[in-house]
Amino acid sequence: MLTAISRYGARVLPDTEQIIARTRARGEFIQGPHIARFEDAFARRAGGSHAVAASNGRMAFYYILRALDLPPGSEIVLPALTFWVVPDLARVAGLKVVFADVDPATFTLDPAAFERAITPATRAVVPTHLYGLPCDMGAILEIAARHNLNVIEDCAHALGATCDGRPVGTLGDAGFFSFQTLKPLNCYGGGLALVRSAALASRVRALAGQEPWPDGKRVEKRLLVGRLQRIFIKPWVFTISAFPILWVSSLIGANPDVYLWEKIRSLHPLPEEYTERFSNVQAAIGLAALDRLDEWTARTQRHAQVMDRALGDLPGITIPQVPPGRTHVYYQYCVYGPQRDELVVRCVRRGIDIETLHVDVCSDLDLFAGERVEPPGAPGARRAAGAMQIPVYASLSEEQTARVARVVRGVLSST
Image (cartoon, rainbow, N blue to C red):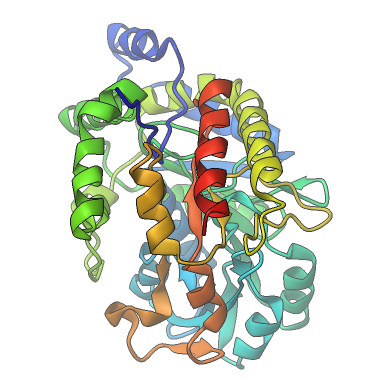
C-alpha cells in the first residue's frame, strides 16, 4: 500500500503529555511561573530584547500597534503577499493599510515598492519574513530611518532565521511570533511580542495583561486539537484518513484546502477567542521546545539541501533563493515550475501532498477592496502565489525526505 506524506509536519516534544500533566498536578495549568520563564528565555535567545507572551501572534502585533499610539488614520505599509489577518488587525487598530509588492524571487517585501508606497501619512512598515526567509532588512531599515517609520517584523514563519548574523525580530523596533501547532515553535497556539524599547515593551505588557485568563476547557480543547493534528499528519494515519480525500479531489478538480483555513472576514470587533492571555501550560511546552529549536531548524535545513540537489538542475524549475547574509529556516520550501496545478495533482497521485498557496494576495481580496497597492496589481505577489510548497519539515525521516525528492524530481522532470 502506498504510504502518503503530508504537506504539514509538527514539531513535537516526546514528553509533551508529561509536561501537561505536571502543570495540572501543581495547579498551574492556566496561571503559573512558566510564562515569565518562557519570556525571559526567549528574550535571552534574542540577545536582550523584551518579550511579552500573548494569546497568539496576531494579538502580539495588535498590542504593538496599540502601544505605539500612532495617530488615527496613519498609514502602515504591509506586503501584498501575507496572511490576511495581519492587515485587517492593523485596520482594527485604527490604521490605514497600504500594500507594497513583494520580490517574487524571495517572496518578501520589495524595498523599492515599499519606498514608493510611503506618503506623509505613513508611520510604520511590517516586513514579513515569509516562509522562513528574512526580508532585505538592510534596505528596509535604511528607508524606514530616512522617513522616520516604525519597523514591526512579522516573524510568524521565521523563528531561528538571521539577517547579517542577527535574529529576526531584533532588527526593527519590534517583532511578533506565532506558536501555532505547525509553526517553528509549537506551543499549540499562542504568540509573543519582542520589543527593543523597555518603555514600549511596558505598554505592550500592560495591554496583554488587561486580557482575561483563558478558560481551562478552551485550553484543554486547544491541546486536544493539536494532539489530533499531529496524529493525523503521521504518514500511516494520513494515508488512511485525509489522503483519500485529496486523491479523490485531484480526480475531480476539487480543492478541499478551503476548509482548512480561518474564514476571511472583518475582525472588528475582535473575536472573543483572540482576547485572552497566554496559558502557563503552553509556556511550559514552549520553554522545553526552545531547547530543541536549533536541532529542528538544522534538520529542516538539511532536508531543504536534499531538495536543492534533487531539483536545482531541472530546466524551468526555480528553487528557493537565499541572498547573502540571510539564513532560511524553510517553514515552507517554495518552487516555481510550469503547469503548477497539474504538477501538484501528479505529486498527490504518487503519495506526496504538495500545497500551492499558504498565504493570501491581500490586495486581491474583497476584504481590502479600495486599499492602495504599490505598484497597482502587485505583479510580484501574483507571481509568488504560483509557487509550489514541497514538504521538508523536521519530522520527516531521511528516507521520507529522499522519497519526496525522488517523486517530485520525477514529476517535474517529465513536464
